[in-house]
Image 1 (tube, one colour):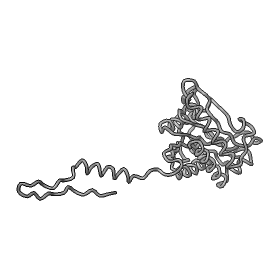
Image 2 (cartoon, helix red, strand yellow; image 1 turned 90 degrees about the vertical axis):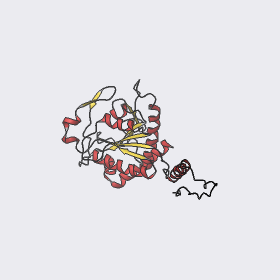
Image 3 (spheres, rainbow, N blue to C red; image 1 turned 30 degrees about the horizontal axis):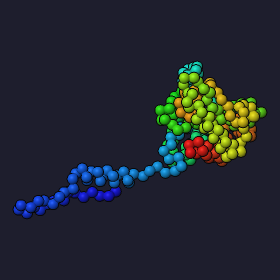
Image 4 (cartoon, rainbow, N blue to C red; image 1 turned 180 degrees about the vertical axis):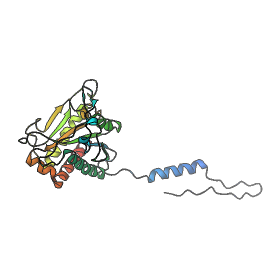
Length: 262
């Protein structure tokens, strides 16, 4: 920062005028301009973007049914505040999977310059409720939000799918087209980056549309869910339990955000 010198003192001779001093307003303007020019600008291909990541469920949910079973308004119905989530056959829980992938993804996105907000602070708490998770993104005026999950379908099914919001008249008509595009970009990047096939048991070509998920219904910003695999399927579960597999998922999801936001 450029230093600003003090006012010059003048030596007036008899009948002469003092040396002209720098007006205070000019000095202030100089300081202000200097401060602005020295403020670093955000760097990275996602600089200035706000992304909300929702790690599905939470580690303390199962111990507090009195909280997670309370009904909340999801625009077109009332649904339980939250659920416990599923697990692999050898008890690797969905909440731990989503927490790990979400933090890996947040680290990558922040390195690209994005401001990233997670809907929960740890994997030991309860909730928040599904409507509040969406409202966190709404209040942040997020450029995009993604809720990360693992499915608990019959073991014969495998693969991933992305869930997009259905239109709820009078609420989300304007944002649904953007959510559709986000869903496509996330699907394409995840498929390409992980090699995991589209779901064999739900959706079409890795995409599904639902009107019963509070995290999508309440959203007024571009929002989608991903079921990153079927935790009851041995092949999917092996990838989801692997640290290398979760890292690959996070990197692929980050590329989906880059495509959508640029």
